[in-house]
Image 1 (tube, rainbow, N blue to C red):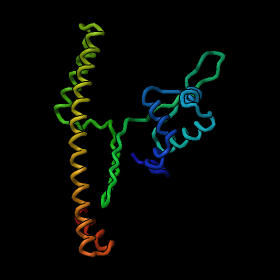
Image 2: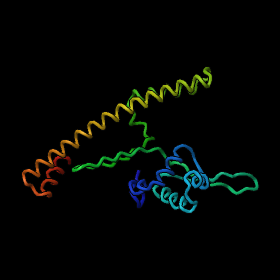
Image 3: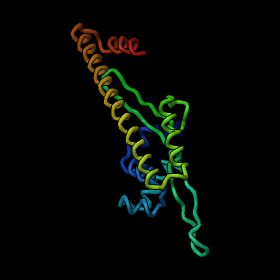
Image 4: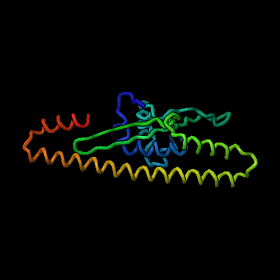
Length: 189
């Protein structure tokens, strides 16, 4: 996902904008709701909303509140995204993933999604049974995510240590910083 004018890191670098996105991830909200829940003025919330709109992270829509009342503008997330930021000496990466792309799913996860879809569509099951089955599948997904994240952290830790060892080696050799950097760039490039 490309942000217009501001980078995603600049947009998400603001705590109020992150909190707005967290609230909108749960459900669409209108300006006054956001202002009250965050205890921030409507004017300040609107400024943050405009940044999020410009970045393409959220969109708005209007809902008529009644025949006499004015319509109310709601804000919601445009699409689910995931962002990974890794920064350590000699290495940095910022990756943004569009979570709506089904082609990235391995067959095992597609099977799980089909199972959820079948459970939800099954009219023979009562709602509580269906919800329990979906909850079990969500827990299974969460457990797999936890395992993957633990493995990723271990791998990143190892990569960070290797780069630190290289920096220390280059320093002991008396290599100038520019030469060390070019060697590491070539290694990682």
